[in-house]
Amino acid sequence: MDRIIDPSWAPYMPRLFQKMDAASDEEKQDEQELTPEEMRILERKLKKERKKEQKKQLREAGICVVKENLEKPSGAELALDYLTSWANKREEWKFQKTRQTWLLLHMYDSNKVPDKHFSILLDYLEGLKGRAREVTVQKAEMLMKKLDNTEPEDSSLLEKSERIRQILQLLS
Image (tube, rainbow, N blue to C red; front, side, top):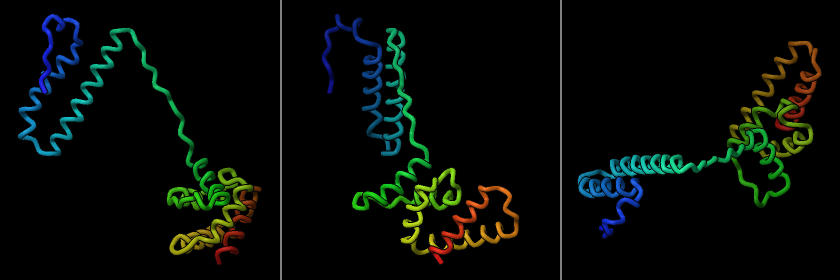
């Protein structure tokens, strides 16, 4: 689609649109010869160039654009929310492998999985099936053997061994 523009308006048009029109004419000729993959790459490049040109024009005009830096919740927060969601809203709850994996990796650490969440985690583990259950039992047994060979000096080791015992009792 060609645009008819009064030539007297040309000085007032941003350079961006003039470049885009020139580029689009070249594109139209090349479009017939490009594969879909090449088209996708070309579109991405042109989009990037347009965005860069727009930023440049905003900078020249003295307009400052500030990006909002939104912090994402940590893996721990997401996993604990997942666990409480499982306990409170089972109808809305949806299984998430990454959250379960995080919970299984950190369930012995009372700093990462507080006691109030650990009791919920034990209920969650009752429903653990298949390979995840087998591997959890194997790891717990291995950790228990390792802790039995060492003398518990630290209270965190005692707490860890108590958690391991509870999990072994539950899953064995």
